[in-house]
Image (tube, rainbow, N blue to C red; front, side, top):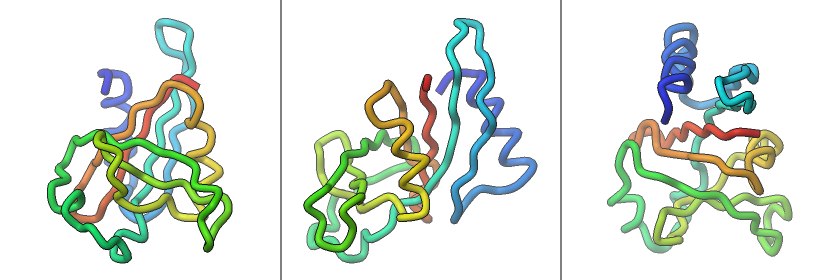
Length: 126
C-alpha cells in the first residue's frame, strides 16, 4: 500500500475504527492524476466452508481477490473472496457488494487488515 493510502487509512482509523462495516474515504487526486479509492469490508460466510485450512493459514497483510459467483443459490450477486491460490475464504457482505463491485474489473489491491475479524482493506485507482 502506498504512503498516500497508508496516511488515509491512519486518518480513518483515528476518526473511527473500521471493523464490522464498510467505510469509504472520499476519492482524492494523487500525483499521477489518478483517483484513489479506499474502502474496507469484512469476509462473511467462512463458517460454512468445508475446507478451513486456507483460513487457518491466513495472516494480516495477505492479499485477497474477488470474483463474481452468479451461480450462487443464495445470492445471484454474490462476490466470493479467494486467496492467491484461488482457495475460497468467504464472501463480501450483501450490503457491501455495490461498493466492492466498483473495484472489480480495474486494478485493485485488497489485503487482510485484521485476521481475527476477517477485515479487508481495499485500494484501487478507479
